[in-house]
Length: 324
Ligand code: ACO
Image (cartoon, rainbow, N blue to C red; front, side):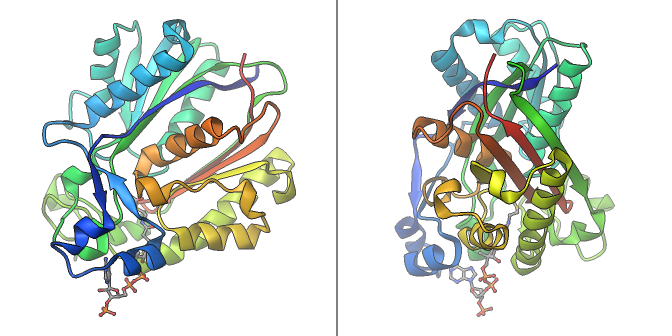
C-alpha cells in the first residue's frame, strides 16, 4: 500500500517580533542576526496561547483547506512537540477531544525532527492496517522556554504549528524511505531540564532552553548531508532526483552548507526562516505549506525532508508527492 500525505494545514501566531525589536532590549543588531542566521522576524504566541491552541489552529487550517472529511478515519493523533502544555495529559489527547475524534493519541519527543519521526510512525500504522489515517502535528510554543536575556538563543526561535493527515495515496506516490537516528552522547549541547536530577553533569538547570550553538552547528552541517545521502540510497535515488529539498529551518548557513554539499540548485530549496525563525517540529510542515502555496510542489515530485536537533537527533524522509 502506498502511504503519503493527504493534506496539510498550518498556523503561526499573529504577534511578530522583528530583529529591530530585539535591538531595543538585547546587545544585538539586525545586521548580526541576518548575516549569522538569515532570520528577520518570528511569530510569537500570546501570553495565554499555548502549544495545544497552536495545534488546534493548524488542524482548523487543514479543515479549511481540505474539508472536515479529511479527518474521517483518523485513528491516531501524534503531536511532535518539545513544549507540551503539560507533561501529561498529552497534547494529542487535547487535540482528540477538541475535534471529537475516535482515535488514540500520544505526544512524541524527538526534538526538532519529531514531525518526521511522527510521519514515519504514522506510515507504519497505516501500512500495517492498524488504522486508516493518522493526524501528525508539529506544534511549538518555544517562546515559553526561551531566555530573552540570552542573545545567542533568543533571536533564533519562533512559535507555530503544522498538521498533516497521513493515509493511503495513489500507487507510485507516498513515502519511499526514512532514516531516524539519535546519538545521546551529544545531550549536553542542547537541553532543557524537566526532572533536573537526571540531567548530565554540567547541564544547565532551569526553565529555559540551553544550547551550545557552535557544537550544534557542526553536528547539523554534518548530519544534514549524511542523513540525506542515506535516505536517498535507501530509496535508490541520488541528489539529482530531488525536486524539492525541505530542510529544518534553523540557520541559513546550515541550509546553504547542505545545499552546496549535495549540489542542489537554489530553486529546489525551501527557506522560510527569514519569516518564521526556527519553529522546531513545526518548521518542516510550515516550509512544505509555503512551497505548496507558491506552486512549487507537483504530483510525482520527489520531496526530501531532513531535520536535526536535541539528542542529538536527526531524521530524513523522501516521498513522491501526490494524494489519494
Ligand atoms: N547578537 C550579537 N552577537 C551575538 C549574538 C547575537 N544575537 N549571539 C551570539 N553573539 C556573539 C557571541 O556572544 C560571540 O561573541 P564573542 O566572540 O565575543 O564571544 C559571537 O557572537 C560569535 O558567537 P558564535 O556562537 O561563534 O556565533 P555563530 O556564528 O556560531 O552563531 C548561532 C551562533 C547562530 C547560534 C549558530 O552557532 C547556530 O546557528 N548554531 C546552530 C543552532 C541550531 O541549529 N539549533 C537548532 C537545533 S535546536 C532546535 O531546532 C530547537
